[in-house]
Length: 355
Image (tube, rainbow, N blue to C red):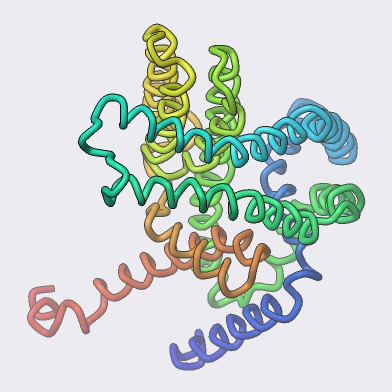
């Protein structure tokens, strides 16, 4: 006989409280373990597939580690410096772009932007703010990121932790299953399976979509000669987990920059627009149906709230655990609603008499 609901709620409440306390006090300490676990979870299906074609678990883990190490090294040496350079260049160029925009409006709409108009004062204020605060903001972000994810974590701890977690992933899952309370094991395993499918659809599926779109946007914009195309493509790909937002924000930024750079060259302006139209078509008709599936189970608003709340409370490590926690809460909430709809409290006496 299972424990009463009141006792179950007490134990699960204690477990949740311990989780949040650990997250609060040991956030920086457990950061490499959270990163390593996330990467191992992402790569576990690759290791399983290599095992099915004849690799041992050890050889599959070593192969994945070597390939991932080469990719990480190439990205660190070739892409990251270019992203940083373009980010700094964009911040430094932003005031001049605002000034150019003001001159354009003055030329086309002279009555709109006389020196005493509110719009003229607002644009001048934006330019001054970008010039005085933009560089400081970017330097602050870069220094914070460097302090948060230091070289030792990236180069030593995370790869080592990922390697051992990936090597023992299936065995750890089996050991956890053995520890489940026997009366509740079927329900817990069903909920865990639903959470895993939700996470797999979002982290593996949607994460791959964001990566592909980020590479596509960045490379395509650089090929048409758009300044800061790589950083715009990176931003567009990064926020593509929210439907349409990545294409809209990236397209607005790219077209805004293209208007200054390619004004009068309508072919290149059209090329920038086509890049984002095709990217949206690629995402909606090919990438998302194939890699994510019909339903992720994480509403974008719920996901944004989880990222904001956990990021505010627990910092960077909170943002890393926000997606799994949001997925788990979503699955548990749907399960609780299903149980409620099957209960006497929902159906009432009339329904029971019909049965």
